[in-house]
Length: 470
Image 1 (cartoon, rainbow, N blue to C red):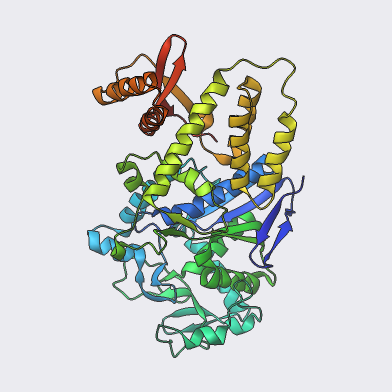
Image 2: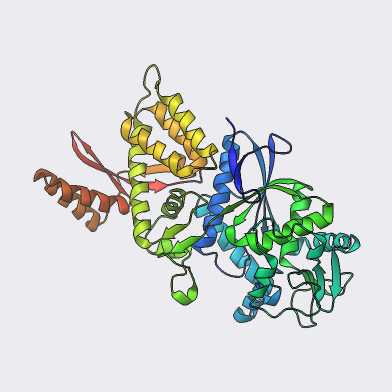
């Protein structure tokens, strides 16, 4: 069965055909490690994780490269202002390397909590300065870059297709520019490849153009070239990368090789908060730590994201997260019944139909919401059996909800609050007050307590998510 993905560059779904099957080169724009990654950032990494899992589900061998930007990303994408990492280092009275190391570690901790697979290679910009210098040298030699007083810039006039990814009208964009144009640049949209550093700049390296540091855009091209050769199959990122960062990557890649190095550009949409933009100034800037502080399992946030297609905006609200938590706990409750059930003699006749429908969904441009709907069809419509248990585990290779790591612990102490809720539910059931009984059951599920009504009476178990389901 063929896999189709939406290519931002061509604006249509295309049949996926890697250059060197079964190998796939996948590059993800990674975090700039000057602050905590917020939940909007994490949506892009959950998306790239799903993409990788779908590729592996289709028996491709994925070489997944992700950069760690620890230098070169200025406050403005228009090559203005200070380096974000350096600025934060000054605020905290630490070195840029200490800042980068701390936030890199936090990023990977949050990724693990969301069951995101580690990339095959995570490459720091500061470890690849020479590769970037070599890349810029070639662009200068090819006549695609020029030197001015503050650095080396790419000349976009040498790449006639500039703007093809986003479809921007360059002149129209310039009319609305909010930054002063550097008068030395040949064209206002020319972008920095290498910036010359003032003497007091903390992070700088020797180069043919004096002491300096790399531009943000050159990092992905240079590291992608090193680890994925001169043609990688898929490049991912958020939609915010399309109009500047990825446009610039395409231009400099072409200037370096005389051809484009990426076949499929795939982007995830924004996460909104309460229907609008997330920002610290608005008081709605949330990280995964904030989600945990409110008592939610990070996997519930992953589940919330998976219920929307990656090319559609997701609106985050605490009520929506509560609904996702409740749904994931219900899913767990059903799954445990399938895990504990015996196998069915003669197998399950509809199993292959479900398998086919699941693969059709995920291979149709990663239609994970449809795939999750299918999972619920099985959980609610089929008798529990070990046969379906294995099918659910196979599906979770794509979903990454950690079903294989589910554990239950019985014979342990519970709080007086939990015990009282269980007793109240029993009273409600005796009175046939099913609405109240179900409401209390949902409360307990939110607290990680799964109830089982048996002929011997009610039993409970604590749901615990274990190791990553990679």
